[in-house]
Length: 327
Image (cartoon, rainbow, N blue to C red; front, side, top):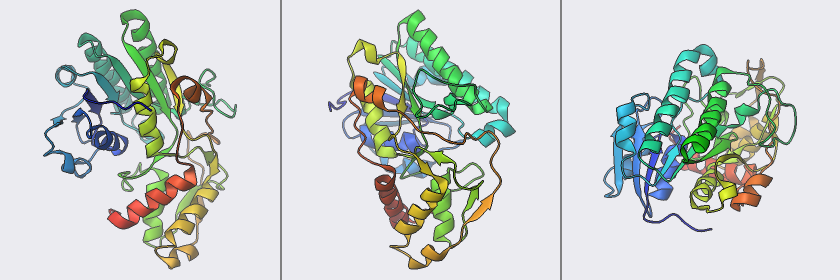
C-alpha cells in the first residue's frame, strides 16, 4: 500500500480514541493538525505529540465556523472524526448530538471546500443501516434510522454527497463498525462495550450484557480503521471517491462470545478473571440486533486488506490495557 508522506493533515477529534490513533500514525511522515474541544477526547491521548515539531493542537469546537476555517488553512486532507458518539447519548440529548454531528460537520465541510482541501474523509457509522435486517450490510442498502445519532450520521453522508456533486470537493465516508483498541476510554456513561467490560473484569466485577447476549456485532480493530483512512487518502481511482465504505473486518461476534474471549485473554494475566460471572440486563433502546459488514466494496475499489480479526485485535487490545493499566 502506498503511504501518505509529506502532507498536511487535519484530524478533527484528534484527541479522541480513533483520532489519537490516526495522529500517532500519520505524524510519523506528515504534518498533523489536531482540532479538539476535549468534550470526549483527552489530553493524555496526545500529550506525547505536543513537543513534536510537525504537530499542532488547536483547541476549539467544530460548531464555531471561524475555528473550522482556521484549522483547514493549507491542509491537504481532512480526516473528520469529531462527533458526539453513542446511541443512548443521542436519545437523552438529541439537540446537542445534532448540533455537533450535523451543524459541526457542515461547518467543517464548508470550510474545507472554501480552502480547496483535496479530499474530505469522514467517520460515518454502521448505525446508518438502521432497521435493515439484511446481512451482511451492503453500502447501497440501508434501512430507517433507529436513533437520533443514526439520523445525524446519515445526514452527514447526504451532505457529503451533495457537496461532492455541487462543489466538486472529493469526499469519502467510512462507516465504522464497532471500532476498538488502544486509547479507548472505559469510563463514563457512554463507554464502548469492550473497554468497559475489560475494566470490569480487571476489577473482578461482573460485566452486564444487554439482553441474552446473542446480539452480534462486527467488532473492528483500530489498525484496520487506520488502514482504511490511508487507503481513502491515497486512491486515485475516480470511481473510488465520493462514496461510502464499510470499515470492518467482515466477521460477526455475539456479546456472549466477546465476553468469553475477553475472559480467555485477560486470564492469561490474571487467572481469577476466568471465574468472574456475567450478568444479563435489559436490551438497550435503539440497538440493532445484528451487525455484519460486507467489505467487498472496500477491497475492490480501495484494495482494503484488514489484518486483524476480532480475536487477533482483542489480544492486542487486552495486552495494551494490561500493560498501561489506564483502567
